[in-house]
Image (cartoon, rainbow, N blue to C red; front, side):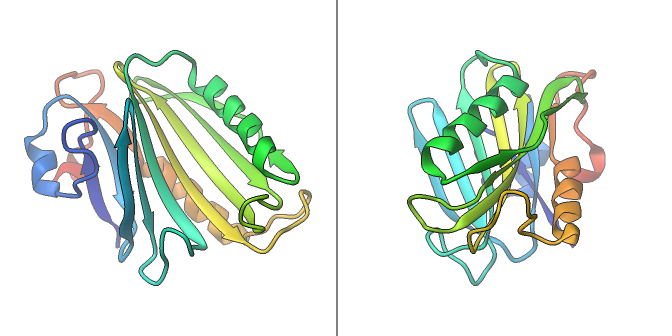
Length: 195
């Protein structure tokens, strides 16, 4: 069973304390923390804050699966879908070849969101293939991006490098990621997550 991490981004970014989540007021990104996973990286530079988690037997440099949460402080300057289109363009600079699925846009709990899978057949830096599923949220004063990533042997763009079960797991995970606001009745935080 997954333990829920309620991150009050900006003040209590990714503390992982459910008790803190209960006391929080305002906009929050609620992210399921996979059982046994550990935080291996956290950095805040300027207006960007990033946290990375991996399974227990992996590290920040040697991983095959990773969960990344990024926030950009300040009023968002672009739509969620445009951000994910730009992300695919960034991949092209560091990959031999890139495949990207369509951008899926929706409103989630009153917030603009977008989701997209992006594949890097072989990273120029690491020499490995990567597949990531991104979900972006446009908050009132922040932009939030959550990604689940796989890294392994290089692959052909037309071939899925992970099993269908892993893809289904990632989609179910992203369904549980919620942006909410305890002070806004139109953007309610799920009660079962805050317990």
